[in-house]
Length: 475
Image 1: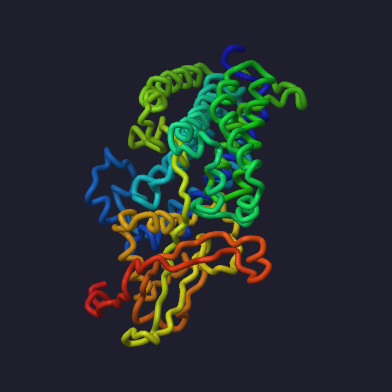
Image 2: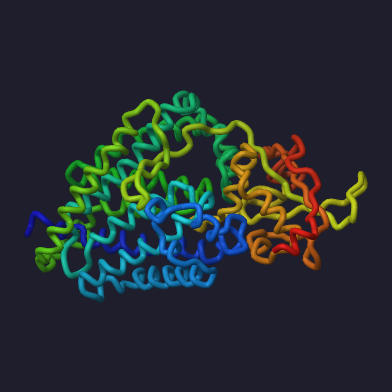
């Protein structure tokens, strides 16, 4: 069946599958290491309470059947182990049907986590990982050549990711149209990386060139994915280069990396490696791939309608299985950066002379002399939500109070999410939160003070709060 397979893309399939499995591993590790404080039985937004309020058909997850922290940990670590096995090539060492089953299990396990993750799992890259992972189920293994139809669906997904991001920018903030958004973006993005300060201080004409190049790559280049080789490979290469630039300039979990992995699936490496003839696929596999292709194209109606709408929404799923979604990011770029600084004291009753000690977060800015670190593709969920909480208290209404309560209680799982606990021996008596305006220092300020940030107090975010002893006994 020469029409069905693309033997020239056998290396692209391998690289894509191994890269995707690696990102699955990171996602499962992120879940395993953070869930107890976020959504565990004693977490800020406990899964047991959530599943009691929702129906399985709205949020399909094995945790509707049963939940315990031990089961969640088992699912997370099992998913990470299975992903590592696929990185090592297990998918090519077993029969085609078994390989597809392994990829399906990986997708189903992560779907079970996302659908009970609530606001902690509300990011677009969760849906992107699930949609990509669903298509990977049907990409095959060494028993057959990569199906042309699935390769097309992967390009269709990459097109929607890039073109959707480009449209939401050009339709959104005026600074994208006048090429000035990068005057602010590197300073105000959710989680800066170690090079973000330096990117921010690049010459402004270069920032304008960056924005213009971004528009070309996101609004024009995606159409070239559907042209003959080598043009499609060149288009994929331009996208990969753009995403690597974003990797260097910030921390966006696995968003950039999964876009790179998708682009690699469009690369034709046969001029370097030659084609790789493989056996004809079984009939059941051909029929299944054709049915899945028709299903995805039919389900693409709403994402396409969203792309064409002047009121385009970004990062939306249209079904509880996250199968065919719409994507987009940074339609609006902030001009200022506010940060919530959480502090505690062990004074029995706060007074004007009280010494407040600051909690340190792993990723979000806090200590003025601390250079931001690189965490992506790992996802620091609490740090990301703290950025949203600084934009508006409404984003933190559900979880910020429980977060403070756990600091007052000295909850070990919550403290593990932080980089610095100023109360290692006993929890504080009071916790407060203050809103500061942060900006990058200039070159001169950095040389004079050694500080990467400058901050000024805006207002009180949460007044000094203590833990009522009755609430501790109830817990």
